Length: 305
View 1 (cartoon, rainbow, N blue to C red):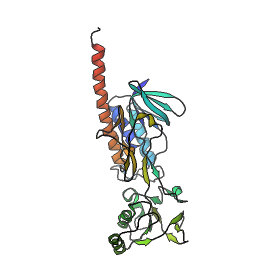
View 2 (view 1 turned 90 degrees about the horizontal axis):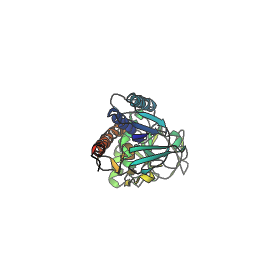
View 3 (view 1 turned 120 degrees about the vertical axis):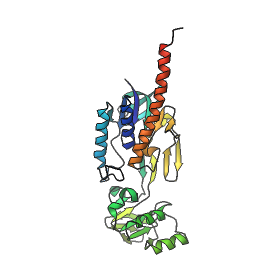
View 4 (view 1 turned 60 degrees about the horizontal axis):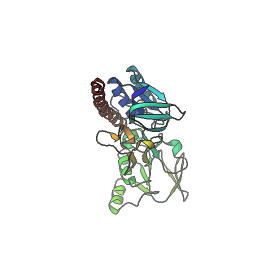
């Protein structure tokens, strides 16, 4: 069987796009690797009508909605994807090959975290990065901002809105300018200079032995689009101040016959934005299929000779 569309990635973008396509009566298969980026989080926030819903529950509802319209979901990882004549061949890690007329890449991104012992184990719980996604949950707590990039000072100021106990650990971040230092001091943000060497239960351990006590730590990951298995599609990867993403045109087209949506194409998209991106890309993808259907119908009815 050749599917109209294979969606690679079963998060908010992939499932939303797949539902839109299935409602347009396209045959759709979603391939989901089963490791959503937000799995460690207790809840999804800033999603109207679903505030605080557990990530796993949100995806389960999305899969059920897709199946109700005749779409399919499989837990599988893509080993290779490439054009095969007018279609695409998607090979899974177990060797099975699938065929589709179009592809929608909704693979999400990978968080490249600072190489600090103890940090990854607490990522998504009391190690955070986004004041909008998780800031409310640590309001009025003591927060240490680990300077791992050029936005550490801004991050300290953002979290200062949520608590009056913020410490900026410079670590790998640049020294504040005179104006920045004045602002931090005026707002009561303590600045600790030096290198952090570990994250412990009580706080951030510095190389000189000092422990910066805190309830939560914020970091600045580098966001990198997941493209494993998609190298044969001719996708263009673009550098971004926050990492690297799949480059698309305004319609979401990433390569001939391939659309991209969600965090792999928009590093800053929250869940609602990723879902919207999936629907918009699906609409343009379906439009492309409609035009092809028209051409094929004309060819099929043309007189012989």
